[in-house]
Length: 236
Image (cartoon, rainbow, N blue to C red):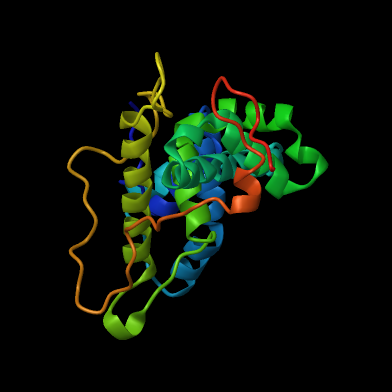
């Protein structure tokens, strides 16, 4: 299975590159390089210097055109919402935790033309290897936080984001739906942290990050779903 490039000078930029381009290493590196343009300019202005080998890794990855970035952002976030819905279905009624039902929920929540089921399935096919990362980011509402008053910075928060994604990955690769011949929700070849990685040791009064909340599906959406192999549930 592929490992996230956490040894990059800015590991979040490199991870975001992989999340958007899990199938294209050159474009993943290019996105990371472009994402770093402003921080590098600020570092230079303040008199700081990156080691030559790190600078070369960034510069040599920044020349790729990323004309498909907006489409990939939509498809990737859609896949994250699907996997988030899967986890919520699992917490609500394990029998309903199927990709079909997750995509029905994602389609309904999207409420736009791009939420068409065929596009949702195509998005899943393209971004399945990073679905757990996008789901973790969606669960934390697409943001990182810092609490400097307790010595908790954005890099700490990014590390705990990875821990949240790893929880979802492990669940997706080990749990099987309770039916005959079922498969795990995620395949074996998804992106994950390198061997030996671990989040920082938690300090007193740090935010309760690194954990996935117990998400559930509202009753009004559950009523519209179906059990595998059975007719759709009736509302009466």
